[in-house]
Image: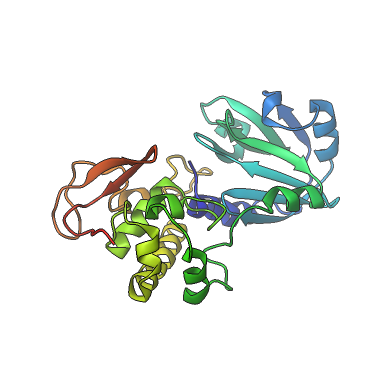
Length: 273
């Protein structure tokens, strides 16, 4: 599932392509991927323009010239592609938004969605999300306060969107590795230690910033000639690396299940808090 770095990469790249271009056509191949009648959805978009692309957690929010929003959540298996008809990806599309000769293809929206909302509806939909980990207002003190009183494991805390927004399975494991902590560590043990809390905060910042700057781990380029998207995939230290050698100590990376979520870690150099 795309996480904060993947959606931030999409935001940056799309902002260079689609802003202020008139929407010339809309194709909906799966009506369950949108929240309006197809005709209404199309009528609201054709002739409109995207004036700003925002990311909130794992969502992209396309701000339209008429004040409404298109809210995208790719969920598991979702991705997007920007190109001409001749560059159309060999994948089924659920929604296509046309900008003249170019189209924004929405792929794999079986669980994900593209919803047309008012500004107020968008705010309400995002109201239960936790703060952004890379927001300028986030610091070590605020992060420590987020952990206070929390119980459970480090893994479940990091992926809880109500606590911190945008982190999922991949980057929770990468953050735990960078901090030298096992994903099964108890959150209350970490929060009771200023040193461990600071270490975890620094790991979160460094991993997410590096991954976003490297385009995340998405498997498919966003557009023809895109060499950035997905380049972080080969740099993942532990995620999906079961049985491989740890890049830090040479130990063997293991996979476990933590409350139904897969987690990858090195048992040699990551320790329980």
